[in-house]
Length: 151
Image 1 (cartoon, rainbow, N blue to C red):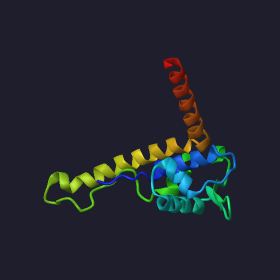
Image 2: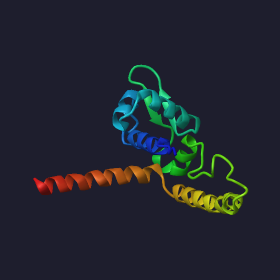
Image 3: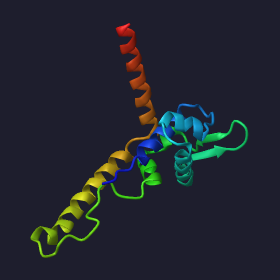
């Protein structure tokens, strides 16, 4: 069973860009933070740009930038920009219709899965990139306080 990390990578990239104060970042610099390949970051940035979340600055010193303020980007927009499947999925192959469970499980799960997807999307719709970035900054401040307390 596969899971996608595109959403997590995309929020990471956007949070990094939001903390740069308008300074463009290259895919190589972003990849260093995400700890992945720059080609993967470029594909992700293309998806984010198509959704109107990032833009690029060409030339020397160029790179990726946020297209809008972090407060104006919901995590739901990020999710829709990079994910092409639902969070949960039904069987890839039809279950056995000769089995009572096989005959009915798809219809039973369809409602449960749709409800879970709607709840997740509702939650992501209430959170912005600014919220995620503020949480990163807050976590770093707590880390620094603990480090100083241990020294």
